[in-house]
Length: 128
Image (cartoon, rainbow, N blue to C red; front, side, top):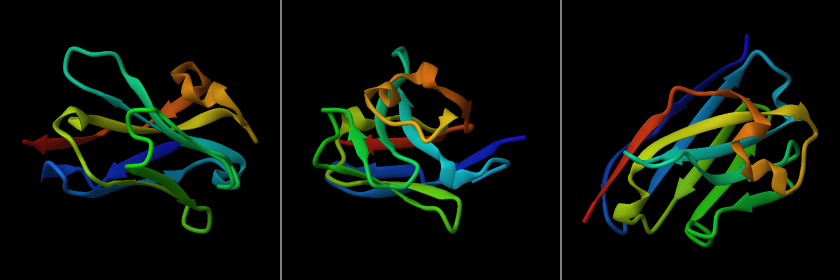
């Protein structure tokens, strides 16, 4: 059974920073790409960032490029999302997820249908 547990969310002022973590278990973590998505109230869940199984390739939504950084530590089975220069429009529940296929790459990782397991989410609120 794959489990993903996010942490690190909270309330922060605009311009501030947060670091989200997602601890994974139940799968060979180092073989799978990982992603972060977010969902604001009344909106569709949207892609934020993804990272390849090795950590060598990363993908970002245009809205977060240059502000957010995704990384992973395969020794700790953990993926991170460092969020800087936060804006009120970044307010959402953030979810981590794992690719359904090992060694996945490419823009397909920006689609939520490519992921088969999701965490419970962590709330990020950015005040203006």
